[in-house]
Amino acid sequence: MFRQLKFLLLASFFLLNVSDQTFAQLTVQGGISPAQAVQNVFLGQGAYVSNVSYVGGPLGLFNGTNSNLGLANGLLLTTGTPQGTIGPNNSSSIGANLNMPGNGYLSMLANYAGTYDACILEFDFIPIADTIQFRYIFGSEEYPEYAPPHSSQFNDVFAFVISGPGFSQPTNIALLPVTNTPVSINNVNAITNPQYYVDNSNFGGTVGYDGFTTTLTAKAAVTPCQTYHIQLMIADVFDGVYDSGVFLEAGSFGSSVSAASGILGNFSNLVCGSSQFQLNFSRMMLN
Image (cartoon, rainbow, N blue to C red; front, top):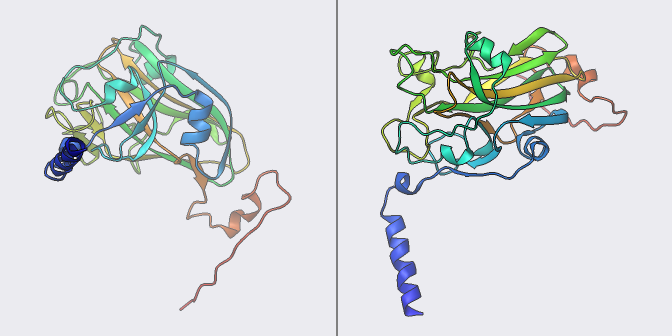
């Protein structure tokens, strides 16, 4: 009993006297089905989801509450393994070649380069409001060696591709805020758009990748009560090593009413296929 008490006291003392960074850690786990990943983890409010499908390596769940990642928890898509994202970053070249095929759309985004180990999660959804959105972080082991000022074709690629009413062709919505610039290693790094970049290459931190983006939001205008399709995908470029991944925030995929349209202007579209609903109003004092 005394030895156990002494151990607990020593452990408590040690925990209180070391930095939070020392013990902070990104944790991951696998074993979740694609349908569970979307319905029970990724899906938030304002959308109905169906026809979930997936190809790629193991799907992962992450918990970044005590890490330097920037998201508390969610779903992980990676060209390697979920375990490869765990820090500390004590290697500049983590990677797992899964020997899996690439993807034609991602090859096109990579200037028709060969892609490998594609990870693609896709599903149909029906929004109940006029804007679909979700939050994410992109990370890669190809930072910083293959990012500007270096010139390289080894730039892993990812995209969030939406199709449906209002989109004449499949459209990538993984863009920098208020731009049409795709989020990529070449477009977000220590030199280009550095405000969206986190340098993790000092062989520390809690994330295994050498660099990753700040938390970004993918967003698109949609028509309420119409059916859309989205593909969340990522792949290695030119070879199957040096992993990259996308962290999707739990509960962030959903629809909301844009400020431009206003709630009353879209009132008839707020509930899809339902004849009964409840609407709550709150009183406001107007000056």
